Amino acid sequence: MSFEIGLKQETTENRQKFLKAFEINTSQIVVPVLAHKNKVYKVIKKDEGVGSDSKSTIVADSQITNVQGIFLFILTADCLPIAVFDQVHEAIGLIHASRANINLIIKNTIAEMVAHYKTRPNDLIANIGPSVGPCHYDMDLWKIATYELAENGLKGENINNEKICTYTSDFYSHRRAKDTGEEDFRFATVFGLKKPI
Image (cartoon, rainbow, N blue to C red):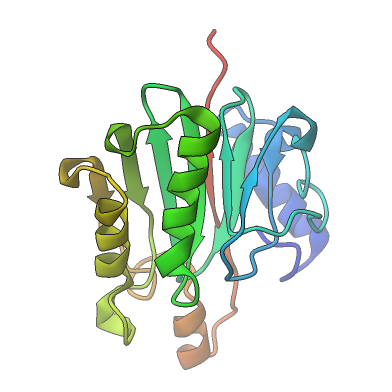
């Protein structure tokens, strides 16, 4: 799914095939360059398609939006993709959390949603996607993420983590690739507000 790894034609085809299954056009996605830092980017209509067919011009580790029909898109292979949904104000955030930024990027994302969309943190629902588990990493990032989400106002029952470890599952894992010599690819997490039919 990454233009940084592998052939551009293959990445383009993979993205199109994946998105088509969910009735999403590649021109609807917004793909940031991830820097393992704490910047949150507010996605607006004019950003639609940025990074969809070449390297992105947006550098941020979290995106937020309330624009229907735009789909936030991040690439990971061990780091935590965290999706947050404001069910009252219909706004979303998609976070890339790593050991370098996990303590601030979650806090910053929620704060930006409060500022821009009048989000109340206790209305948020969060899902932690496939990521490396404590079984194969020297930090329990799942535990830290859960703590940070709760510390910033989410209800415990609104924090979901299927605890799918990338190292031991079918998802790509950077650490497993380093250990085994397999190819080091990235998979995508996509999150958006579909327009009503």
